[in-house]
Length: 378
Image 1 (cartoon, rainbow, N blue to C red):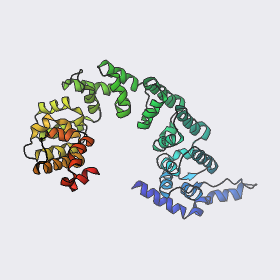
Image 2: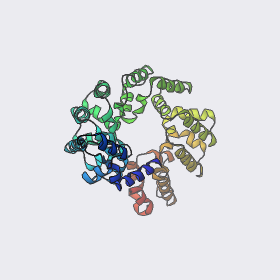
Image 3: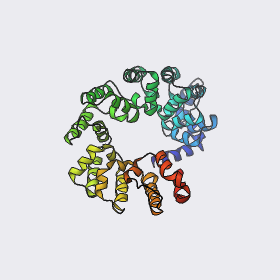
């Protein structure tokens, strides 16, 4: 609502630029009465929408978003130099469009003190021009971060944890948020604490790329997650221990309680729910909607009940439409037509990889499966 009002005001101002640039009456009178010399004329500010769309041919959408925060360009020459520099360094029109929508303040930044150093530190890591443009377009807040107090120290910590620049680049591609935090106060103590709990270095380093926010939690919050996992009886020697901590860290207490309630409503006792969590904590990381959808699909089938889900909770992570239902359909057709010499276990059908499933149960029976076969090929 607020943005639409702002856009309306911007549009009105564009149609009434004479009003915008006309000096107030009182100021005009004072100049006539008291000034004995001709006042020095300063260049009028340019509406940012005009500046971006007419002078630089950017999209009206990006210009309107920018105008919500920067209505006018007071120094167009300065902004021109910034835009030229970005274009010369591999930023496409779409890259700059994204920057203007998310961080229009870049237009008013200092080129030599703010813009250039941020590109250089990423160049020194080995990022290509296009990679740098992708990262900064998605995260223009990086331009506002102090090079000495935040960016350089964060990159230094990542180097100490990951090693080669290529691995640091890989981590920043996954999440530039590593540059937003004081890693000395978050990542380092969190790594040390997880190691003290018996979590392997391999699992910790893996999470840098697969689940960045785990190591960016406040250390006291991570300690709370570990305490709760311990209280639920997950052994620190279990391969699932780290995944239990990671899963719990991905949701607030309200969401956690809602998932416990959902499982109880589906017929599981409190002890069974905790057992499910200890054996397959990643199954609790999926949405409540998906958990309910998968459980209801299994419970609606003949010869399957809650015990099947209890014994195989890892199946909850799979897509109903993309995996489970099509495989059930294939199995039912093959069984009805007596095409299977040996009846496979249902869990085997549902758990094997897509490539294995296609090779064993789809490609050899393409004619018999018809439309179902085509569905699985897409």
